[in-house]
Length: 347
Image 1 (cartoon, rainbow, N blue to C red):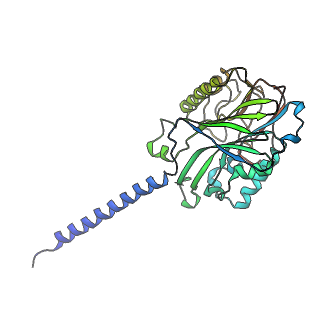
Image 2 (cartoon, rainbow, N blue to C red; image 1 turned 90 degrees about the vertical axis):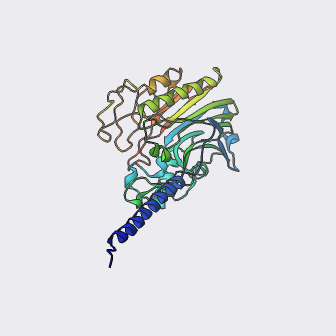
C-alpha cells in the first residue's frame, strides 16, 4: 500500500493557499469598498447650499454696519476628549451641538470646521442643518472633506471605528451666500498610500455674503494637522485664493490653521502632544504675507480647549474695523477647540 502522506500534504497545502488567497482578495475588496464613497475630480468645485425658509436679516439694524462673526472647530460634537474615548451616545452629541449653538448665538456669520453631515460616529445627524436651525440663520454653504464608506479608526477595538463617514466644513450666514466654491488641498506626500486612502481630503471653502451694505468675500480654512510641509503647502494655496479676491473687497478668512504664530512663547514640548514641534513652521508667516490682519493680534490660546496652551484658530479680516474680539472659554468645553467671536464694523 503506497504512502498517502505526500498526497494529503499537497491537498492541505492547496487548501491553505486557497484560504490565504480568499483572505487577501477579501481584504483588497474591503479596502476598495471602505475607502470609496466620493471622489473629488476637480481642483475647484461648487459648494453645496442649504437654505432655510425663514430669513430674519431684514429685522437686523443694518445701519449699524456691525457684523458678529464666529469661527469654531466643533469636533463633530464629541467634546474635548480624543477620538479614542468614543463612541458617544446620541444624547452626548446633541448636548454638545446645543452648547456650540449657545456659544454662537447672535452671530451673523459662523465658520465651522469638522462638521459631520451623515456620519456613523455622530449618529448620522446633519450637523450643518441642525446648527443652522438652532441659530436661526437663513443660509448655509458647505464643502465635503471626508466621505468614506467605512473608516477603520481608531484602529482597535473595532467597536470604536468611525464607520460610515461624511464630514466637512460650513459657513452659516444671516445673509444670502453666493458663488460657493471648494478648492482641493493636497494630502500629505509623506503618508503611506494606504493611509491616504482613508485620510481627509481637506479643502478651502470660499463664498460671497450678500449683505444689505454690499458683498463680503469669505474663506473657511481647515489646514493639515500632522504634516508641516503639507500644512505650509496649504498656506501657499490659501495665498493664491486670497489673491483672486478683488483688492478693494471686504474679506474674512477664518478657521483652524493648526499652527501657532512663530513668536509664540511655546512652540514644542506640549504636555498633550509632546511630539509636536512648530519651531520651523511658517504657516502663519505665509498667511500674514497676504496682508490680512489677525483681529486678535496673535494673543490668546484656543487649543486644547480643556487646558489651552497654543493658538491654532484665527480670524483674519480686510476692509473692516474689528472690535470686541475674544476667545470664548467654557468649562467643560463643547469641543477640543475654543471658538473666537469678533465684531467687525464699518465695512
